[in-house]
Image 1 (tube, rainbow, N blue to C red):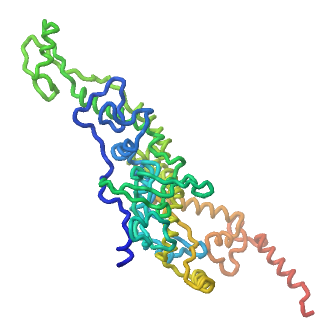
Image 2: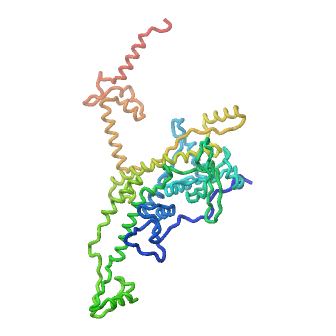
Image 3: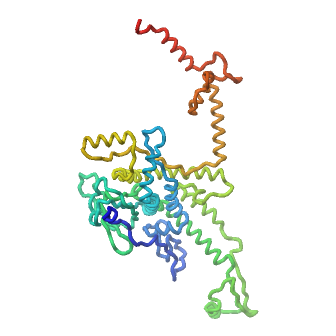
Length: 479
């Protein structure tokens, strides 16, 4: 039986996607003092302005509120979208062999998809787990034991915070893990099955203090936006086409009540028709141009969400055609936020890479590593896999336009031209990794009128000549 067949899978099994709540049948109309909540299934459901927020509320917002979707799913996608390269800092040039070995091992585990999902759920709920299946476990009971060092990594599976049924924490005050979970009991889908996993088989995703959701600081503003959008939609639906006003000549209260309860006018809209006598005055009245401008209320709330999420408002709205310069600036600021998130998830990436290196799943060879293996083999009498020295280089998400690139090149060219007023051509060429000009043609400063003047040699050239003269005057050792 292969290692893959022996290891118990840690997948969640059959499970539903994020639950989407909707205004159900029989939903009550909002009372005058009630706000539209997130989610809104009836008057009492959901988290209102200033109210407590549940995990189901957060999941609803992330899948139904466009702004909440952007700062959870969207940010997670952008964080891992361009990926990264792995380099050995001990080499002068980029180490393509090491990078290729790491990328092959990560791709086999569907790294990008799993880590993107983990960050998505971490942003929605405040934390998530990546459970690792090693080949040292032959049954689910073995998952309770610490992972054996050097075991092969076979599978990654993401679990949400809401999948955590129970944690057993370390009670020994002398332990470095005192107060932290030692065992996680996790729900595997909707069938009621559970697994208990040792913390050494888990990567805990949590990039913020106290494990709070990124939605919490902007929740009240999300609620306000939802109120505004709901009000705009209802205004258009109820009053945009006008609403019926029926005047019955000479009718008393009892007759008006009878009219009001007549089924023929119970669902009156502008697209229906009504037959009446000359004693009935029937008109449609609407808002008649007196509705409030919602942008004056919408924009300040949107700015608050931008501040709370760290994402420029223009990025939350989406790039606007024709505003290339502004959108480029906003995009650059946005990817500074992404870069900050990447630095916070980097330790989790390095944890996985370290496990793959320890198991030998990342195979890489250079002179230093070969010597290190030989040393371990001689000292320990067995093969060992020492840790590689490497750095993660995230691929920039922001790409300047061709116009910006040309403008930057022009500015740099102008700077180099000005440097020639106080630097020799060879010094400027050295900054560009270019060889000196032949026949010492670049050792003199340029004259203000142009060209290289006699007697105007660079300070370092004169110093070198003086040093050569001093050395020639020193007595030889043989004398």
